[in-house]
Length: 221
Length: 343
Ligand SMILES: Nc1ncnc2c1ncn2[C@@H]1O[C@H](COP(=O)(O)OP(=O)(O)OP(=O)(O)O)[C@@H](O)[C@H]1O
Ligand SMILES: [Mg+2]
Image (cartoon, rainbow over all chains, first blue to last red):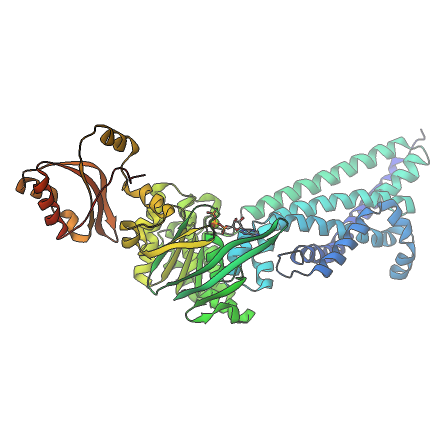
Protein backbone atom coordinates (compact mmCIF):
# COMPACT_ATOMS: atom_id res chain seq x y z
CA UNK A 1 0.00 0.00 0.00
CA UNK A 2 1.22 3.43 -0.96
CA UNK A 3 0.61 6.43 1.21
CA UNK A 4 -1.70 9.19 0.03
CA UNK A 5 -1.12 12.86 0.76
CA UNK A 6 -4.64 13.72 1.94
CA UNK A 7 -3.85 17.41 2.52
CA UNK A 8 -4.06 17.91 -1.26
CA UNK A 9 -5.76 14.72 -2.39
CA UNK A 10 -9.11 15.60 -0.81
CA UNK A 11 -9.62 18.07 -3.65
CA UNK A 12 -9.41 15.19 -6.15
CA UNK A 13 -11.95 13.27 -4.11
CA UNK A 14 -14.32 16.21 -4.01
CA UNK A 15 -13.98 16.71 -7.76
CA UNK A 16 -14.62 13.03 -8.38
CA UNK A 17 -17.70 13.11 -6.16
CA UNK A 18 -19.11 16.03 -8.11
CA UNK A 19 -18.32 14.25 -11.38
CA UNK A 20 -20.20 11.18 -10.18
CA UNK A 21 -23.18 13.33 -9.24
CA UNK A 22 -23.06 15.02 -12.65
CA UNK A 23 -22.82 11.67 -14.44
CA UNK A 24 -25.92 10.58 -12.52
CA UNK A 25 -28.06 13.69 -12.76
CA UNK A 26 -27.68 14.64 -16.42
CA UNK A 27 -28.07 11.12 -17.84
CA UNK A 28 -31.03 10.63 -15.49
CA UNK A 29 -32.64 13.72 -16.96
CA UNK A 30 -32.06 12.81 -20.60
CA UNK A 31 -32.77 9.10 -20.10
CA UNK A 32 -36.08 10.01 -18.42
CA UNK A 33 -36.89 12.27 -21.34
CA UNK A 34 -36.58 9.23 -23.60
CA UNK A 35 -37.50 6.45 -21.19
CA UNK A 36 -40.72 7.79 -19.70
CA UNK A 37 -42.51 8.36 -23.03
CA UNK A 38 -41.08 5.06 -24.27
CA UNK A 39 -42.44 3.25 -21.22
CA UNK A 40 -45.84 4.89 -21.64
CA UNK A 41 -45.82 3.96 -25.34
CA UNK A 42 -44.98 0.32 -24.58
CA UNK A 43 -47.97 0.23 -22.25
CA UNK A 44 -50.59 1.96 -24.37
CA UNK A 45 -49.78 0.21 -27.65
CA UNK A 46 -50.21 -3.26 -26.21
CA UNK A 47 -53.22 -5.43 -26.95
CA UNK A 48 -56.50 -4.05 -25.68
CA UNK A 49 -54.97 -0.77 -24.51
CA UNK A 50 -55.70 2.84 -25.44
CA UNK A 51 -53.63 3.00 -28.61
CA UNK A 52 -53.42 -0.70 -29.46
CA UNK A 53 -50.92 -1.06 -32.29
CA UNK A 54 -49.16 -4.38 -32.79
CA UNK A 55 -46.43 -3.05 -35.05
CA UNK A 56 -45.51 -0.14 -32.79
CA UNK A 57 -45.56 -2.33 -29.71
CA UNK A 58 -43.40 -4.96 -31.38
CA UNK A 59 -40.80 -2.44 -32.56
CA UNK A 60 -40.58 -0.51 -29.28
CA UNK A 61 -40.56 -3.61 -27.17
CA UNK A 62 -37.82 -5.19 -29.27
CA UNK A 63 -35.63 -2.09 -29.14
CA UNK A 64 -35.95 -1.97 -25.37
CA UNK A 65 -35.09 -5.65 -25.08
CA UNK A 66 -32.06 -5.44 -27.34
CA UNK A 67 -30.49 -2.45 -25.62
CA UNK A 68 -31.33 -3.90 -22.21
CA UNK A 69 -29.51 -7.12 -23.02
CA UNK A 70 -26.15 -5.48 -23.81
CA UNK A 71 -24.00 -5.29 -20.66
CA UNK A 72 -23.07 -1.71 -19.83
CA UNK A 73 -19.34 -2.28 -20.06
CA UNK A 74 -19.79 -3.44 -23.69
CA UNK A 75 -22.21 -0.60 -24.46
CA UNK A 76 -19.55 1.77 -23.20
CA UNK A 77 -17.05 0.59 -25.80
CA UNK A 78 -19.49 -0.18 -28.59
CA UNK A 79 -20.97 3.30 -28.49
CA UNK A 80 -17.64 5.12 -28.88
CA UNK A 81 -18.34 6.16 -32.50
CA UNK A 82 -21.77 7.49 -31.53
CA UNK A 83 -20.30 9.33 -28.56
CA UNK A 84 -17.71 11.00 -30.77
CA UNK A 85 -20.47 12.03 -33.16
CA UNK A 86 -22.62 13.56 -30.43
CA UNK A 87 -20.16 15.19 -28.02
CA UNK A 88 -16.98 15.26 -30.13
CA UNK A 89 -14.82 13.40 -27.62
CA UNK A 90 -14.58 9.84 -26.34
CA UNK A 91 -13.05 10.39 -22.92
CA UNK A 92 -14.05 12.26 -19.82
CA UNK A 93 -17.27 12.92 -17.98
CA UNK A 94 -19.16 14.36 -20.95
CA UNK A 95 -18.29 11.40 -23.15
CA UNK A 96 -19.50 8.95 -20.52
CA UNK A 97 -22.91 10.52 -20.49
CA UNK A 98 -23.89 9.27 -23.95
CA UNK A 99 -23.63 5.55 -23.12
CA UNK A 100 -25.14 6.27 -19.71
CA UNK A 101 -28.25 7.76 -21.35
CA UNK A 102 -28.50 4.89 -23.83
CA UNK A 103 -28.10 2.45 -20.96
CA UNK A 104 -30.64 4.06 -18.65
CA UNK A 105 -33.41 5.00 -21.11
CA UNK A 106 -34.68 1.47 -21.84
CA UNK A 107 -34.20 0.55 -18.20
CA UNK A 108 -36.42 3.48 -17.21
CA UNK A 109 -38.91 2.51 -19.93
CA UNK A 110 -39.28 -0.94 -18.37
CA UNK A 111 -39.67 0.53 -14.89
CA UNK A 112 -42.28 3.01 -16.10
CA UNK A 113 -44.06 0.18 -17.86
CA UNK A 114 -44.26 -1.87 -14.68
CA UNK A 115 -45.50 1.13 -12.66
CA UNK A 116 -48.24 1.88 -15.17
CA UNK A 117 -49.32 -1.73 -15.41
CA UNK A 118 -49.79 -1.78 -11.64
CA UNK A 119 -52.61 0.76 -11.98
CA UNK A 120 -55.98 -0.91 -11.52
CA UNK A 121 -57.55 -1.37 -14.98
CA UNK A 122 -60.80 -0.36 -13.29
CA UNK A 123 -59.51 3.21 -13.18
CA UNK A 124 -59.06 3.27 -16.95
CA UNK A 125 -62.48 1.74 -17.27
CA UNK A 126 -64.03 4.45 -15.09
CA UNK A 127 -62.17 7.14 -17.04
CA UNK A 128 -63.53 5.79 -20.33
CA UNK A 129 -67.03 5.62 -18.92
CA UNK A 130 -66.87 9.33 -18.09
CA UNK A 131 -65.91 10.17 -21.64
CA UNK A 132 -62.19 10.90 -21.15
CA UNK A 133 -60.02 11.02 -24.27
CA UNK A 134 -57.10 8.59 -24.48
CA UNK A 135 -54.66 11.42 -23.71
CA UNK A 136 -56.71 12.51 -20.73
CA UNK A 137 -56.68 8.94 -19.51
CA UNK A 138 -52.87 8.86 -19.71
CA UNK A 139 -52.20 12.24 -18.12
CA UNK A 140 -55.06 12.56 -15.67
CA UNK A 141 -55.57 9.00 -14.57
CA UNK A 142 -52.72 6.59 -15.38
CA UNK A 143 -49.72 8.77 -14.56
CA UNK A 144 -51.13 10.37 -11.39
CA UNK A 145 -52.22 6.96 -10.13
CA UNK A 146 -48.78 5.49 -10.88
CA UNK A 147 -46.77 8.50 -9.69
CA UNK A 148 -45.79 7.22 -6.28
CA UNK A 149 -44.59 3.94 -7.73
CA UNK A 150 -42.91 5.78 -10.63
CA UNK A 151 -40.83 7.78 -8.17
CA UNK A 152 -39.69 4.62 -6.40
CA UNK A 153 -38.79 3.04 -9.72
CA UNK A 154 -36.92 6.14 -10.87
CA UNK A 155 -34.97 5.91 -7.61
CA UNK A 156 -33.89 2.44 -8.64
CA UNK A 157 -32.84 3.80 -12.03
CA UNK A 158 -30.88 6.62 -10.37
CA UNK A 159 -28.97 4.18 -8.21
CA UNK A 160 -28.34 2.07 -11.30
CA UNK A 161 -26.82 5.16 -12.90
CA UNK A 162 -24.51 5.76 -9.94
CA UNK A 163 -23.22 2.22 -10.39
CA UNK A 164 -22.90 2.54 -14.14
CA UNK A 165 -21.09 5.86 -13.87
CA UNK A 166 -18.51 4.19 -11.66
CA UNK A 167 -18.06 1.51 -14.30
CA UNK A 168 -17.50 4.23 -16.88
CA UNK A 169 -14.29 4.89 -14.94
CA UNK A 170 -12.90 2.06 -17.08
CA UNK A 171 -12.82 4.45 -20.05
CA UNK A 172 -11.45 7.31 -17.97
CA UNK A 173 -14.73 9.05 -17.37
CA UNK A 174 -13.72 10.74 -14.16
CA UNK A 175 -15.82 10.32 -11.04
CA UNK A 176 -15.43 8.08 -8.03
CA UNK A 177 -15.20 4.91 -10.09
CA UNK A 178 -12.36 6.32 -12.13
CA UNK A 179 -10.58 7.41 -8.94
CA UNK A 180 -10.96 3.97 -7.41
CA UNK A 181 -9.56 2.30 -10.53
CA UNK A 182 -6.72 4.78 -11.07
CA UNK A 183 -5.51 5.03 -7.46
CA UNK A 184 -7.01 2.17 -5.52
CA UNK A 185 -6.48 -0.55 -8.12
CA UNK A 186 -3.66 0.52 -10.42
CA UNK A 187 -1.54 2.37 -7.86
CA UNK A 188 -2.40 0.38 -4.75
CA UNK A 189 -3.80 3.25 -2.67
CA UNK A 190 -6.09 1.10 -0.59
CA UNK A 191 -7.21 4.08 1.49
CA UNK A 192 -8.48 5.82 -1.65
CA UNK A 193 -10.41 2.68 -2.51
CA UNK A 194 -12.01 2.64 0.93
CA UNK A 195 -12.90 6.32 0.80
CA UNK A 196 -14.55 6.02 -2.64
CA UNK A 197 -16.56 3.01 -1.53
CA UNK A 198 -17.76 4.87 1.56
CA UNK A 199 -18.72 7.88 -0.54
CA UNK A 200 -20.61 5.71 -3.03
CA UNK A 201 -22.49 4.03 -0.19
CA UNK A 202 -23.43 7.45 1.22
CA UNK A 203 -24.62 8.71 -2.19
CA UNK A 204 -26.73 5.61 -2.83
CA UNK A 205 -28.22 5.77 0.66
CA UNK A 206 -29.08 9.43 0.24
CA UNK A 207 -30.78 8.78 -3.08
CA UNK A 208 -32.79 5.87 -1.73
CA UNK A 209 -33.92 7.73 1.37
CA UNK A 210 -35.00 10.80 -0.61
CA UNK A 211 -36.77 8.60 -3.17
CA UNK A 212 -38.68 6.82 -0.44
CA UNK A 213 -39.67 10.09 1.16
CA UNK A 214 -40.79 11.67 -2.07
CA UNK A 215 -42.81 8.61 -3.01
CA UNK A 216 -44.48 8.58 0.40
CA UNK A 217 -45.22 12.28 0.17
CA UNK A 218 -46.90 11.79 -3.21
CA UNK A 219 -49.00 8.94 -1.90
CA UNK A 220 -50.22 11.02 1.04
CA UNK A 221 -50.40 14.53 -0.31
CA UNK B 1 -84.39 5.08 -23.01
CA UNK B 2 -82.12 2.07 -23.51
CA UNK B 3 -83.02 -0.52 -26.10
CA UNK B 4 -81.18 -3.78 -26.59
CA UNK B 5 -81.99 -5.09 -30.01
CA UNK B 6 -80.80 -8.62 -30.60
CA UNK B 7 -77.48 -7.93 -28.90
CA UNK B 8 -74.84 -10.64 -29.11
CA UNK B 9 -71.31 -10.45 -27.80
CA UNK B 10 -68.79 -13.20 -28.30
CA UNK B 11 -65.10 -13.47 -27.52
CA UNK B 12 -62.62 -15.37 -29.62
CA UNK B 13 -60.55 -17.41 -27.23
CA UNK B 14 -57.97 -20.17 -27.49
CA UNK B 15 -60.67 -22.75 -26.83
CA UNK B 16 -63.02 -21.42 -29.49
CA UNK B 17 -65.69 -18.77 -29.21
CA UNK B 18 -67.30 -17.81 -25.92
CA UNK B 19 -70.68 -16.18 -26.39
CA UNK B 20 -71.18 -14.05 -23.30
CA UNK B 21 -74.41 -12.42 -24.47
CA UNK B 22 -76.86 -14.08 -26.86
CA UNK B 23 -79.62 -12.33 -28.80
CA UNK B 24 -80.70 -10.10 -25.96
CA UNK B 25 -83.62 -7.79 -26.63
CA UNK B 26 -85.41 -5.62 -24.12
CA UNK B 27 -86.14 -2.00 -23.41
CA UNK B 28 -85.49 0.06 -20.34
CA UNK B 29 -88.01 2.88 -20.13
CA UNK B 30 -87.32 6.38 -18.99
CA UNK B 31 -87.62 6.58 -15.21
CA UNK B 32 -87.24 2.84 -14.68
CA UNK B 33 -85.07 1.24 -12.09
CA UNK B 34 -84.41 -1.82 -14.17
CA UNK B 35 -82.67 -4.82 -12.66
CA UNK B 36 -80.78 -7.53 -14.50
CA UNK B 37 -80.19 -10.56 -12.34
CA UNK B 38 -78.30 -13.76 -13.00
CA UNK B 39 -75.65 -16.05 -11.60
CA UNK B 40 -71.96 -15.40 -11.99
CA UNK B 41 -70.92 -15.75 -15.61
CA UNK B 42 -74.43 -15.20 -16.96
CA UNK B 43 -73.20 -12.29 -19.05
CA UNK B 44 -74.64 -9.41 -17.05
CA UNK B 45 -71.49 -7.30 -16.90
CA UNK B 46 -70.82 -7.85 -20.57
CA UNK B 47 -74.36 -6.73 -21.36
CA UNK B 48 -74.21 -3.54 -19.30
CA UNK B 49 -70.79 -2.68 -20.75
CA UNK B 50 -72.35 -2.87 -24.20
CA UNK B 51 -74.52 0.13 -23.28
CA UNK B 52 -71.66 2.63 -23.17
CA UNK B 53 -69.60 0.57 -25.58
CA UNK B 54 -66.91 -0.40 -23.11
CA UNK B 55 -67.59 -3.65 -24.97
CA UNK B 56 -68.65 -3.48 -28.56
CA UNK B 57 -71.50 -5.88 -29.38
CA UNK B 58 -70.53 -8.48 -31.97
CA UNK B 59 -73.94 -8.03 -33.53
CA UNK B 60 -77.19 -6.29 -32.75
CA UNK B 61 -77.83 -2.76 -31.68
CA UNK B 62 -77.88 -0.85 -28.42
CA UNK B 63 -79.81 2.40 -28.60
CA UNK B 64 -79.66 5.02 -25.89
CA UNK B 65 -82.16 7.81 -26.39
CA UNK B 66 -82.90 6.37 -29.81
CA UNK B 67 -79.31 6.72 -30.92
CA UNK B 68 -77.47 3.64 -32.09
CA UNK B 69 -74.31 3.74 -30.01
CA UNK B 70 -72.26 1.91 -32.64
CA UNK B 71 -73.01 4.57 -35.23
CA UNK B 72 -71.34 7.33 -33.18
CA UNK B 73 -67.91 8.74 -33.97
CA UNK B 74 -65.24 8.54 -31.26
CA UNK B 75 -65.96 12.11 -30.22
CA UNK B 76 -69.74 11.67 -30.24
CA UNK B 77 -69.31 8.50 -28.21
CA UNK B 78 -67.34 10.40 -25.55
CA UNK B 79 -70.07 13.02 -25.39
CA UNK B 80 -72.72 10.32 -25.15
CA UNK B 81 -70.80 8.62 -22.33
CA UNK B 82 -70.93 11.83 -20.32
CA UNK B 83 -74.69 11.38 -20.27
CA UNK B 84 -74.39 7.78 -19.10
CA UNK B 85 -73.01 7.51 -15.58
CA UNK B 86 -71.45 4.27 -14.42
CA UNK B 87 -70.94 2.85 -10.93
CA UNK B 88 -68.69 -0.14 -10.34
CA UNK B 89 -68.55 -3.05 -7.93
CA UNK B 90 -65.03 -2.17 -6.83
CA UNK B 91 -65.66 1.57 -7.00
CA UNK B 92 -62.69 2.26 -9.33
CA UNK B 93 -61.81 5.51 -7.61
CA UNK B 94 -58.49 7.29 -8.12
CA UNK B 95 -56.53 6.43 -4.98
CA UNK B 96 -54.17 9.35 -5.56
CA UNK B 97 -56.99 11.90 -5.51
CA UNK B 98 -59.11 13.23 -2.69
CA UNK B 99 -62.84 12.63 -2.56
CA UNK B 100 -63.32 16.16 -3.86
CA UNK B 101 -60.94 15.62 -6.79
CA UNK B 102 -62.52 12.29 -7.64
CA UNK B 103 -65.93 13.88 -7.99
CA UNK B 104 -64.54 16.92 -9.78
CA UNK B 105 -62.63 15.07 -12.47
CA UNK B 106 -65.51 14.33 -14.89
CA UNK B 107 -66.27 18.05 -14.86
CA UNK B 108 -62.64 19.05 -15.35
CA UNK B 109 -62.41 16.73 -18.33
CA UNK B 110 -64.95 18.89 -20.10
CA UNK B 111 -63.19 22.08 -18.98
CA UNK B 112 -65.94 23.29 -16.67
CA UNK B 113 -65.05 26.65 -15.02
CA UNK B 114 -63.51 26.23 -11.58
CA UNK B 115 -66.28 28.08 -9.72
CA UNK B 116 -68.92 25.86 -11.29
CA UNK B 117 -66.95 22.72 -10.45
CA UNK B 118 -66.70 23.82 -6.84
CA UNK B 119 -70.40 24.38 -6.51
CA UNK B 120 -71.39 21.19 -8.27
CA UNK B 121 -69.00 19.01 -6.25
CA UNK B 122 -70.22 20.57 -3.02
CA UNK B 123 -73.83 19.89 -3.96
CA UNK B 124 -73.07 16.32 -4.99
CA UNK B 125 -71.13 15.53 -1.83
CA UNK B 126 -73.95 16.83 0.28
CA UNK B 127 -76.44 14.82 -1.80
CA UNK B 128 -74.56 11.59 -1.09
CA UNK B 129 -73.91 12.61 2.52
CA UNK B 130 -70.15 13.00 2.39
CA UNK B 131 -69.66 16.73 2.79
CA UNK B 132 -67.26 16.20 5.67
CA UNK B 133 -65.04 13.80 3.70
CA UNK B 134 -64.13 16.10 0.81
CA UNK B 135 -60.44 16.18 1.71
CA UNK B 136 -60.06 12.53 2.56
CA UNK B 137 -58.47 9.94 0.33
CA UNK B 138 -60.37 6.84 -0.78
CA UNK B 139 -58.27 4.53 1.42
CA UNK B 140 -59.57 6.42 4.43
CA UNK B 141 -63.18 5.55 3.58
CA UNK B 142 -65.38 2.53 4.23
CA UNK B 143 -66.79 0.54 1.31
CA UNK B 144 -70.15 2.24 1.57
CA UNK B 145 -68.53 5.68 1.60
CA UNK B 146 -66.40 4.78 -1.42
CA UNK B 147 -69.51 3.77 -3.31
CA UNK B 148 -71.11 7.10 -2.40
CA UNK B 149 -68.13 8.82 -3.95
CA UNK B 150 -68.53 6.56 -6.99
CA UNK B 151 -72.17 7.58 -7.28
CA UNK B 152 -71.40 11.29 -6.83
CA UNK B 153 -68.72 11.03 -9.53
CA UNK B 154 -71.13 9.27 -11.88
CA UNK B 155 -73.71 12.01 -11.33
CA UNK B 156 -71.28 14.89 -11.86
CA UNK B 157 -72.04 15.36 -15.55
CA UNK B 158 -75.82 15.19 -14.94
CA UNK B 159 -76.39 11.95 -16.82
CA UNK B 160 -79.77 10.69 -17.98
CA UNK B 161 -78.88 7.10 -17.29
CA UNK B 162 -76.97 5.46 -14.47
CA UNK B 163 -75.45 2.02 -15.03
CA UNK B 164 -74.65 0.07 -11.88
CA UNK B 165 -72.58 -3.07 -12.26
CA UNK B 166 -72.88 -4.92 -8.96
CA UNK B 167 -72.79 -1.61 -7.13
CA UNK B 168 -73.61 -3.25 -3.81
CA UNK B 169 -71.98 -6.67 -4.17
CA UNK B 170 -68.90 -5.70 -2.19
CA UNK B 171 -70.96 -4.29 0.68
CA UNK B 172 -72.60 -5.77 3.76
CA UNK B 173 -76.43 -5.99 3.88
CA UNK B 174 -76.82 -2.89 6.03
CA UNK B 175 -74.64 -0.74 3.77
CA UNK B 176 -76.33 -2.28 0.73
CA UNK B 177 -79.67 -0.98 2.00
CA UNK B 178 -78.28 2.52 2.43
CA UNK B 179 -76.73 2.56 -1.06
CA UNK B 180 -79.95 1.24 -2.59
CA UNK B 181 -81.88 3.99 -0.83
CA UNK B 182 -79.44 6.48 -2.34
CA UNK B 183 -79.96 5.03 -5.82
CA UNK B 184 -83.71 5.31 -5.37
CA UNK B 185 -83.23 8.93 -4.37
CA UNK B 186 -81.17 9.48 -7.53
CA UNK B 187 -84.01 8.03 -9.55
CA UNK B 188 -86.73 10.03 -7.81
CA UNK B 189 -85.08 13.40 -7.40
CA UNK B 190 -83.28 13.65 -10.71
CA UNK B 191 -85.49 11.38 -12.79
CA UNK B 192 -82.43 9.39 -13.80
CA UNK B 193 -83.09 6.01 -15.38
CA UNK B 194 -81.15 3.34 -13.51
CA UNK B 195 -79.96 0.01 -14.91
CA UNK B 196 -78.76 -2.27 -12.13
CA UNK B 197 -76.82 -5.48 -12.57
CA UNK B 198 -76.83 -7.82 -9.62
CA UNK B 199 -76.83 -11.40 -8.46
CA UNK B 200 -78.68 -10.50 -5.28
CA UNK B 201 -82.46 -10.83 -5.37
CA UNK B 202 -82.95 -8.43 -2.41
CA UNK B 203 -81.61 -5.66 -4.65
CA UNK B 204 -84.32 -6.37 -7.21
CA UNK B 205 -86.98 -6.68 -4.52
CA UNK B 206 -85.99 -3.48 -2.77
CA UNK B 207 -85.70 -0.94 -5.56
CA UNK B 208 -86.43 -2.24 -9.06
CA UNK B 209 -89.70 -1.82 -10.88
CA UNK B 210 -88.75 -4.07 -13.77
CA UNK B 211 -86.43 -7.02 -14.04
CA UNK B 212 -84.77 -9.30 -16.57
CA UNK B 213 -83.34 -12.66 -15.59
CA UNK B 214 -80.24 -13.81 -17.44
CA UNK B 215 -78.82 -17.27 -17.80
CA UNK B 216 -76.02 -18.40 -20.07
CA UNK B 217 -76.01 -15.12 -21.93
CA UNK B 218 -79.73 -15.08 -22.62
CA UNK B 219 -82.61 -13.23 -21.04
CA UNK B 220 -84.88 -16.07 -19.94
CA UNK B 221 -87.60 -13.98 -18.34
CA UNK B 222 -88.46 -10.35 -17.94
CA UNK B 223 -91.29 -8.13 -16.85
CA UNK B 224 -92.48 -6.00 -13.97
CA UNK B 225 -91.04 -7.05 -10.64
CA UNK B 226 -94.56 -7.71 -9.43
CA UNK B 227 -95.32 -10.14 -12.24
CA UNK B 228 -92.01 -11.92 -12.06
CA UNK B 229 -92.25 -12.32 -8.29
CA UNK B 230 -95.81 -13.58 -8.37
CA UNK B 231 -95.60 -15.79 -11.44
CA UNK B 232 -92.01 -16.85 -12.02
CA UNK B 233 -91.81 -19.21 -15.01
CA UNK B 234 -88.27 -20.43 -15.45
CA UNK B 235 -86.61 -22.63 -12.89
CA UNK B 236 -83.80 -20.13 -12.30
CA UNK B 237 -86.31 -17.35 -11.77
CA UNK B 238 -88.22 -19.48 -9.29
CA UNK B 239 -85.00 -20.12 -7.40
CA UNK B 240 -84.20 -16.43 -7.29
CA UNK B 241 -87.69 -15.57 -6.08
CA UNK B 242 -87.56 -18.34 -3.47
CA UNK B 243 -84.29 -16.96 -2.20
CA UNK B 244 -86.10 -13.90 -0.90
CA UNK B 245 -89.73 -14.94 -0.78
CA UNK B 246 -90.13 -18.32 0.90
CA UNK B 247 -92.74 -19.20 -1.69
CA UNK B 248 -92.09 -22.93 -1.83
CA UNK B 249 -92.98 -25.47 0.82
CA UNK B 250 -89.90 -26.88 2.49
CA UNK B 251 -89.16 -30.51 1.62
CA UNK B 252 -89.68 -31.62 5.22
CA UNK B 253 -93.19 -30.20 5.28
CA UNK B 254 -94.09 -31.83 1.96
CA UNK B 255 -92.73 -35.15 3.16
CA UNK B 256 -94.61 -34.95 6.41
CA UNK B 257 -97.92 -34.04 4.75
CA UNK B 258 -97.81 -36.53 1.90
CA UNK B 259 -96.87 -39.46 4.11
CA UNK B 260 -99.80 -39.38 6.53
CA UNK B 261 -102.28 -40.67 3.93
CA UNK B 262 -104.92 -38.04 4.63
CA UNK B 263 -106.43 -35.54 2.21
CA UNK B 264 -105.05 -32.05 2.64
CA UNK B 265 -106.60 -28.85 1.45
CA UNK B 266 -103.59 -26.73 0.74
CA UNK B 267 -103.70 -23.44 -1.14
CA UNK B 268 -101.26 -20.80 -2.18
CA UNK B 269 -102.59 -17.27 -1.68
CA UNK B 270 -100.86 -14.37 -3.38
CA UNK B 271 -101.19 -10.96 -1.88
CA UNK B 272 -100.58 -8.16 -4.29
CA UNK B 273 -101.07 -4.59 -3.34
CA UNK B 274 -103.49 -3.31 -0.72
CA UNK B 275 -105.17 -6.60 0.10
CA UNK B 276 -102.32 -7.95 2.12
CA UNK B 277 -103.12 -5.78 5.04
CA UNK B 278 -106.64 -7.10 5.47
CA UNK B 279 -107.14 -9.94 7.89
CA UNK B 280 -108.66 -12.08 5.15
CA UNK B 281 -107.79 -15.43 6.56
CA UNK B 282 -109.17 -14.97 10.00
CA UNK B 283 -112.33 -13.55 8.47
CA UNK B 284 -113.07 -16.56 6.24
CA UNK B 285 -112.00 -18.86 9.02
CA UNK B 286 -114.69 -17.51 11.27
CA UNK B 287 -117.32 -17.23 8.54
CA UNK B 288 -117.01 -20.82 7.31
CA UNK B 289 -116.00 -22.39 10.59
CA UNK B 290 -112.59 -23.48 9.36
CA UNK B 291 -109.28 -23.85 11.03
CA UNK B 292 -106.61 -22.11 8.99
CA UNK B 293 -103.06 -23.28 9.34
CA UNK B 294 -100.30 -21.26 7.70
CA UNK B 295 -97.69 -23.76 6.53
CA UNK B 296 -95.24 -21.37 5.01
CA UNK B 297 -94.87 -17.96 3.52
CA UNK B 298 -94.01 -14.37 3.96
CA UNK B 299 -95.33 -10.94 3.31
CA UNK B 300 -92.96 -8.27 2.20
CA UNK B 301 -92.98 -5.03 0.24
CA UNK B 302 -92.53 -4.63 -3.49
CA UNK B 303 -92.61 -1.17 -4.96
CA UNK B 304 -93.68 0.00 -1.54
CA UNK B 305 -96.83 -2.11 -1.71
CA UNK B 306 -97.41 -5.23 0.34
CA UNK B 307 -96.65 -8.40 -1.52
CA UNK B 308 -96.92 -11.85 -0.09
CA UNK B 309 -97.14 -15.46 -0.68
CA UNK B 310 -98.81 -17.69 1.91
CA UNK B 311 -99.29 -21.42 1.75
CA UNK B 312 -102.15 -22.40 4.00
CA UNK B 313 -103.95 -25.57 4.92
CA UNK B 314 -107.68 -25.53 5.72
CA UNK B 315 -109.21 -27.99 8.11
CA UNK B 316 -113.00 -28.33 8.00
CA UNK B 317 -115.92 -29.40 5.84
CA UNK B 318 -114.74 -29.79 2.21
CA UNK B 319 -117.75 -27.87 0.84
CA UNK B 320 -117.18 -25.02 3.20
CA UNK B 321 -113.53 -24.93 2.23
CA UNK B 322 -114.56 -24.61 -1.39
CA UNK B 323 -116.88 -21.75 -0.54
CA UNK B 324 -114.15 -20.05 1.46
CA UNK B 325 -111.66 -20.35 -1.40
CA UNK B 326 -114.22 -18.96 -3.83
CA UNK B 327 -114.70 -15.97 -1.58
CA UNK B 328 -111.00 -15.30 -1.22
CA UNK B 329 -110.63 -15.61 -4.99
CA UNK B 330 -112.86 -12.60 -5.45
CA UNK B 331 -110.03 -10.41 -4.25
CA UNK B 332 -106.85 -12.47 -4.31
CA UNK B 333 -105.07 -15.00 -6.45
CA UNK B 334 -105.50 -18.46 -4.97
CA UNK B 335 -104.02 -21.63 -6.39
CA UNK B 336 -104.43 -25.14 -5.11
CA UNK B 337 -101.14 -26.72 -4.14
CA UNK B 338 -100.53 -30.25 -5.32
CA UNK B 339 -98.01 -31.80 -2.99
CA UNK B 340 -96.71 -34.07 -5.73
CA UNK B 341 -95.98 -31.22 -8.02
CA UNK B 342 -94.10 -29.24 -5.45
CA UNK B 343 -90.57 -30.18 -6.43
N1 LIG C 1 -62.84 -10.20 -22.18
C1 LIG C 1 -63.34 -11.45 -22.20
N2 LIG C 1 -62.74 -12.43 -22.92
C2 LIG C 1 -63.24 -13.67 -22.94
N3 LIG C 1 -64.33 -14.07 -22.27
C3 LIG C 1 -64.97 -13.16 -21.53
C4 LIG C 1 -64.52 -11.80 -21.45
N4 LIG C 1 -65.36 -11.12 -20.64
C5 LIG C 1 -66.28 -12.01 -20.23
N5 LIG C 1 -66.06 -13.23 -20.76
C6 LIG C 1 -66.88 -14.43 -20.54
O1 LIG C 1 -68.23 -14.09 -20.75
C7 LIG C 1 -69.07 -14.72 -19.79
C8 LIG C 1 -69.91 -13.70 -19.10
O2 LIG C 1 -69.10 -12.86 -18.30
P1 LIG C 1 -69.69 -11.64 -17.47
O3 LIG C 1 -68.56 -11.00 -16.76
O4 LIG C 1 -70.51 -10.79 -18.36
O5 LIG C 1 -70.62 -12.37 -16.45
P2 LIG C 1 -71.40 -11.78 -15.20
O6 LIG C 1 -72.80 -12.23 -15.35
O7 LIG C 1 -71.15 -10.33 -15.07
O8 LIG C 1 -70.73 -12.54 -13.99
P3 LIG C 1 -70.33 -12.00 -12.53
O9 LIG C 1 -71.56 -12.04 -11.71
O10 LIG C 1 -69.33 -13.00 -12.09
O11 LIG C 1 -69.76 -10.63 -12.68
C9 LIG C 1 -68.14 -15.51 -18.88
O12 LIG C 1 -68.18 -16.86 -19.28
C10 LIG C 1 -66.80 -14.91 -19.11
O13 LIG C 1 -65.80 -15.90 -18.97
MG1 LIG D 1 -70.16 -9.09 -13.58
